[in-house]
Image (cartoon, rainbow over all chains, first blue to last red; front, side, top):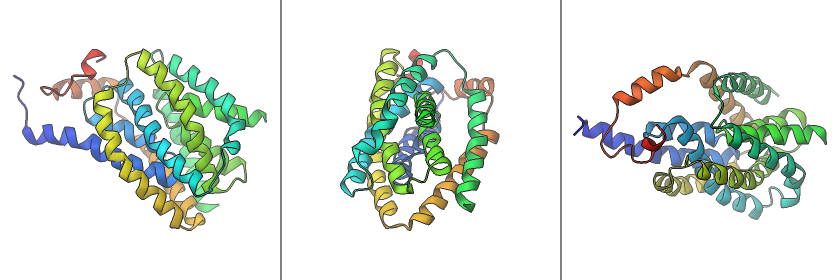
Length: 126
Length: 141
């Protein structure tokens, strides 16, 4: 038997669930950004980095299904609006999934950070 | 058209890597197009579905998805989605855009400054192993 603090054990189980709720809010509110929150929460539940990334896709797909239905229902967009982006997105998805087991995402994260800060400043001030 | 292909390709690569691909596409919409914020969010969500389905197929094949655990997280996320959609519906579009900008800033700073090195992560996690807490992750840890 490993030495386990019961409080830590409960927290480890509850954190991903709280993360799921928070990810859901972001998914519905912004239509994006959930993955960046979901991955650390899933990691806190004991999944390794690659599992957390892969499992976050499953989580976000389920949440996005509901969000998409609600956005379509209220007329925010149509299916036709998204079609021009579909070929590039499918090709990119396959490329990303094939690359995932092989590459480190460390440098990509840094580029991302800079891109997000730049975009965030533009959106707040623009 | 070429910018649409580049933006959608790059965002999907990032989404498949769990890096927040939706954010990339939202940045493209916000900075390089005049598509309204709520429409951009809707397109982003809609586009994510086939991309996620394809990614999931690959990830499941690679045995990387912890399905048993993620089911409960999904159930907790659904009320959050309803709440988020409701807020985005009643919120002024300008403020929605600013709120997303603030979120981006926070996440950008976190990405740049808040990362532990992979070695430290591994050390910390191995010292926190708990009984019954590594059923899925142990296969790939």
